[in-house]
Length: 261
Image (cartoon, rainbow, N blue to C red; front, side, top):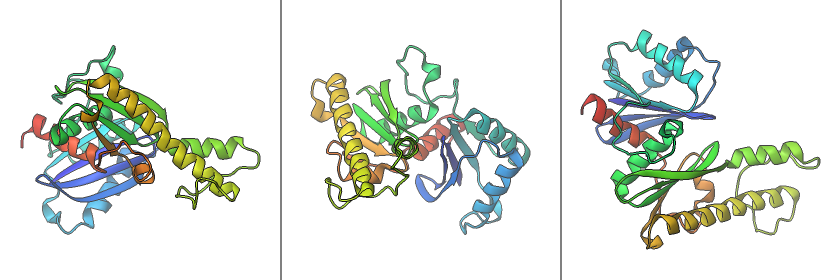
């Protein structure tokens, strides 16, 4: 059994693989204040409740992180509690098989490279990955499997929080589809602006990116992932595939490449 861990700015997503199949997944808050011991308690609590783990535990661990302080504690946790288990931390020097054609490849988030790897292996290229997380990221992958760049926009939750904090008569709202694009209340008006505004943003950015990526923009596969993807799926016209576990699948592929099948 392989444990994959994707540490994001807001949430940490964990997936348990039995071979190529993801058999369990969890989502917990990312807390930069958690120590290695606290992380171990959380992890052991989740794994201990799963019937497939048994007494043998996991056989390997793969992790990527956009939060350096959490990654530091993760390393300490692996050393203290899982020292006999192979662990692959995605960082510069780890083999991903994805050439990064950026001015400074080291500044690209490891989760974006992992997403590119999984997308090109699963669906071929050229492709664009739209990840709906703390930020909404758009990542372009060539037909040869090269990561050639992307775009970053404020995420949906960030925008909702900012709108509620800066608008004197506005407040934080539940993210859901309103009855109509013409809101009949302040809450519905905010929901409509967020939902259809972000759907329009996705369509606009992806169409422009696909036109630069290929002479035939229709041949570019668009893959959506991330915790908030389901909110926009029904309204954005350019998304071809929804794969909620794209990053976890990519982590499995990197583990197999670096630690052996």
